[in-house]
Length: 361
Image (cartoon, rainbow, N blue to C red):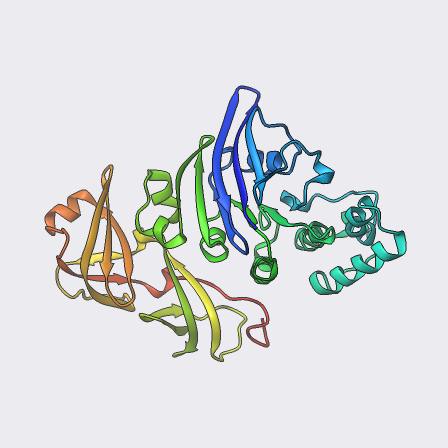
């Protein structure tokens, strides 16, 4: 199944135009700053706002002429918007009943979804009594209740407390993985895009500026916004304890020393993600002295000049992207093929540890 969209939407004086496709079992992230037009695009695909021009096809069949209730799209809205006067159960049962199912069957289906996606939440509770994370779980269940062929998640973590994001991110990853059709993820957070999506569409000022896999976007950003946003270093692997307060993140191409996450039992953890900003990586002509726990040597693969900054990609273990001033790059004579040393502090590495990975989390 393939979703194809080529639309132009007018919202006041603003024109948002985009053309892209998402394939079967593919998660496509629409990534961009607030006001870029991401939500406008997916609301138009869902039929909630009209497109001035264009088409929306599902397996080659036009759906842009259908009313919202007849489009096979499940959408979890930003901030987990729910019907405030309905209970959690009735919210999830609503799209099933809207498609003609009997009340008892709709409620039974809703209870099953809530048991899998929102365990522990009272089905009789009203949305106003729920936390942001709980509302988003219910919104996800409602989006899936009508057996949609396309799943759309609009900023699913934006209204969720930091303490609840890791657990909800894990749920989103499982849900996206298990959904058979095309999946659209709207986000302004590069971590969400890089860890949840198969491909990324970068949207700026109502226009697509780049499309590619997370690796392609990260390695070769085409605009300053994309470079600033997605040029981070992303590590994934097994976390094992070192001395008190520190751990070793064993990735596929190298080991990174990191701070041990607070409140987590000192036991090995699998499938741990971590990020490091390129500006937190220092480059040196000779092996550096100092307090940085991470020191590696590598060959410069690429140098990209962005204003007064130089983004340097290294073939090292692990692979790194550093951002330094053009003056520093000039003084070190950094160019493709240059052998340099890179260093960064353990405390600059930000871990994303999912609840359930350790007993005390």
